[in-house]
Image (cartoon, rainbow, N blue to C red):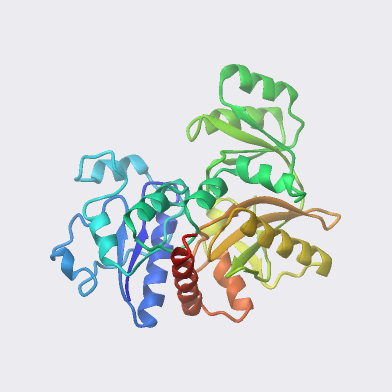
Length: 351
């Protein structure tokens, strides 16, 4: 097939997306496909050949190494030649229409929140991953947790707070500590703050204003971090991540060696079954397609608390879902092919 891997974009996870996309490209080429990677936002600016040659003469792949710091999105905007408010860069939609399938390698709000999926549905462009509705719901932690709680899935207590002076003051006065402040549609732990003191809570709420106009203020659950993927409707062996310092933030996620990852996780059988069941139920509840990954904290009583679900989990060399798939006997190249096959089946069924 001619496969277009869509990566980059204009989210705080831009660099992570390039790393995922480059690895997916290499895997699908090993599977015999013609594959080109295109940046959603910058598009084909600088491509020296006719677009008809895209799959025969693809652009060079981006660097797979992820920088420790988050990307400078203002600099990305300034570098763009196409002066438009559209997220689709030069030639992107035309390239997508040429492909047999678009492998959605985007991460974060730009690409994972349902807007790209809705546009592709309207244009008849086949793509990987979940449809527009499940993607949109899963992108907002408030909506996802509301559905999970209604289903009886254990999730930390939370409230949504608008970042007005009045609401910030009220939260600082009444919120039990410790707590977690997180933007509702963020990813890669950008905009997540664990607050043990009033000063930390104050700083977190002020810092969150950079990213959003509202936040989730969530009950802090002390425990171990676990992640459980779903592939083709079946849950995968969970993985435990143990950061060597701090919590599982952007640096600990993407810098090799910053965290210890144990898969299959060494966990009580009952707790594992509960995690796998909850991950699968969330996947079904939101109508997700092909693959997803749910995040949990296991408390001291071995109770798994659901935090959030990712509809486009990372596919980098340090990402968790590929490790879980490997533990289930699915190598990386086969995982990429399975994602394509399951997604195309879902698109045929209008899911």
